[in-house]
Length: 473
Ligand code: AMP
Ligand code: ZN
Image 1 (cartoon, rainbow, N blue to C red):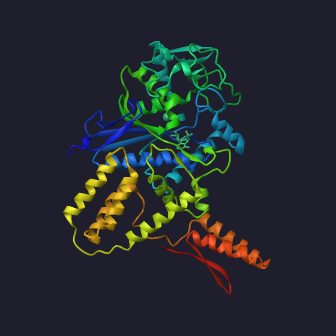
Image 2 (image 1 turned 90 degrees about the vertical axis):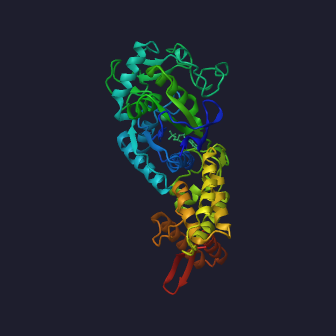
Image 3 (image 1 turned 180 degrees about the vertical axis):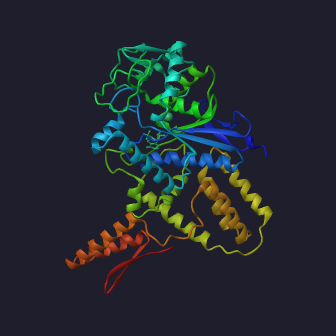
């Protein structure tokens, strides 16, 4: 199989859909920016990880030999994506009265749990930013020697005027960027060019900064951007095939990664840059501090299964921004449940129909290879189910095959055990309904019963009290 023929990806670097050709034969090295572990991930962050999961599994499905690395940002990320604002980890530690290390451990675990809940394959290589300080020091030392970086007032900065086509990835016009990074941030007088960025801070604004290390330039800590360049270099060496993240990472984070990696290596570093569009809420930008903080746990408490959220995401193309509403999630949930019920009702009748199998697999591969067209991949699955000329055995084989990429658990029987947070929610509702009945507010009691029924939870009144049952479509 000539695998390179199959995958086309939109490349932010060239602004075109291109044939994907790895640097070295069949081997694909993917680097995906990891979470900043100062709080739970919101479902917007997780949309990006779902898209990256499809990319990784899709490439494996097409026969590539894929390795994927991801960092865990536990140091250096300030509340602006540039060099200003507070340190996010310190902020998280203060909020919860814990150490930054405790915060990092707790939220790393929570993030990995969310990934598993969403059937996202955990990357085989995960590196903490704070475990790789020696690599950053090695890279910064070389950039200083070669004239790409400079020391000023205690910090080490990257000189963007030395970079090759600094604005290529973002397509930004430097004239439009008043202070280079964000119009709203204060200007740092230590910089040669307004858009220069910090590689190493010694001039800390944070008196009580806990994570700091000795360096040739004094005790301090790395800038946010150097961690991904450093970890990618450590894990994959001088060439990377695909680098991913959300669209907010394009500038300044990925722009700065390219500048410093190419300055250090002395050649082009990564050929394909893929970015997922944002999930927004109805008020606009999804946030961890304003409005409802939408997490996987919250969805579970409300009775949604994480895989229903995955299905919701896969119905849109990763490059289109998406607005989250409970109504649209309900729509996705209903469709998902019907699809699953249909799949589970398939029998073992008939022998595999090779021709039909290949025909549909080819369609599925074409949708996948067309810049990860997940909604079309799902349409192919529906077409298989609808096709009267395809027997159940072949349908089952095809759906199992597609689900290697989609990971929708379509053959997993409903679990009899209910998730603890879902159970808590149901018991609270039962209690609320009991209270309403006691107060003769039967309208409210019925409303609670119907609301749960809408979520697939049937209440059963018995002489001993109310119990419940999770119903299948
Ligand atoms: P962070 O934990 O803030 O470093 O972000 C983790 C990942 O989520 C990054 O790849 C971001 O680009 C991505 N991201 C941030 N906000 C959103 C959003 N609203 N929708 C989709 N992805 C996002
Ligand atoms: Zn990164």
